[in-house]
Image 1 (cartoon, rainbow, N blue to C red):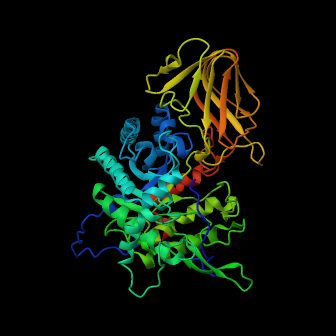
Image 2 (image 1 turned 180 degrees about the vertical axis):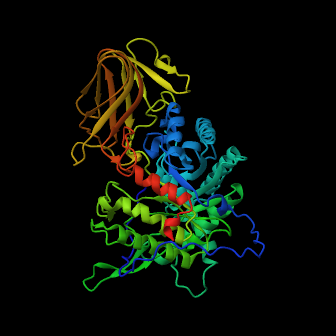
Image 3 (image 1 turned 135 degrees about the vertical axis):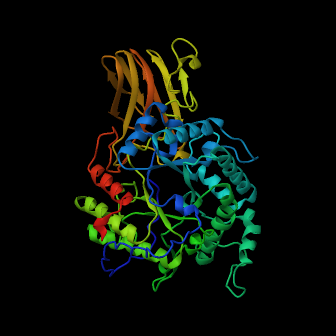
Length: 554
């Protein structure tokens, strides 16, 4: 799940607002007005599900197995979703942006496959363009990429070339109802010298008498102007030039506020004001506005559990504030009713026993506020495994294979589905080095339980041993056929990263998927193994009600 800073003022004293009210019937004696279609019309009533191919969002594109897609999409359809959201990571598709540009054609082929599968399943598609995370070996550090694209005009041109290529690949796809950029993938942390010309262009749009720094803005000392520049930058330098490329292009706007600090009575910094990002709401006419929501918005965020009624108040308050600031219709691309993201344990959550009641009532709140639709982030729980190419969708990319017999490339076996599996027999050794740039690494000296999993077609029973910078731990496979085995492990990352090793001590296997993780993201619909969970039926009802007339809201 995406991480956000809980930086906003708590909202207090809100009254629980009334339920949905049906609009009055049109006068039958008058001819109905015919309004011109807008990009938002294609999104109205959409109930979407993000899909990560049973992998972590950060490594889903090379990680998904084609053999699972039809069944997964059919399950989404059966659960009442009519749209699937796919992540289009900049680093996966255009790993090298300087000098501009190199593309990975495998990524485009896999995207085309998913679009075809969605069409076959009767699902519409939304694309999150420029998703920030990528484990592609040639993509480099994501922080560096983000800093460059937000400051260097040449890097920005490369990014727009990537969007143009995606536009060409998806042209004519009637099932593509929305594409959107996100502030999360374009998070401005610092303005550097390469942005001097763009900064001066922004200043020319500001009031002449407005206080401004002598040089480039500091994110703390010049917080208000810095954030106004960020808002302007995303709309004018990303959304505006990209809008002609797609039938409907939106921006997921930051709906949290950021603090401006001043010295307090004792000299320690205190919050002087909260800076909102209203500038991100100013999209081209007719384009839908995309936002996210979670129970922490407007809450105290002291680890509290909120009643359903209070969470409904806060949801309604956010939608009301947006309506005051922007006339654009709203799509909630991440309706995050549950969240166990590491590091955000202080964020408010809905009381587990009241989550179903919240889902039931939220339909009326959203319909009354004219929300176009929503997307659910975690429809199947996923393990945060930092392994690149975990299911060999890209062959042996990222892996080093030493075989007791034969060449490494000969171990790859193509399947009728278009997937690969890796022949792995006694004496073989497979390894991958995980660099720190992939984010938080599993480690034995924290409070989290660490696990390693191996999925394989067992051809002859035997033992596979795994390690993550520490001692080898055995996984015993008995019998034959497709099996998945998991074991506790004690990762020991070094300063330069984490070594993951797999040894075949006996037996014969065809490896299908590998994972190393210390956290499972919870969504409440299906667990890590695909078994139904507590929120499945409530979400199915919510989907059905939102797509229907919802007469119960009268």
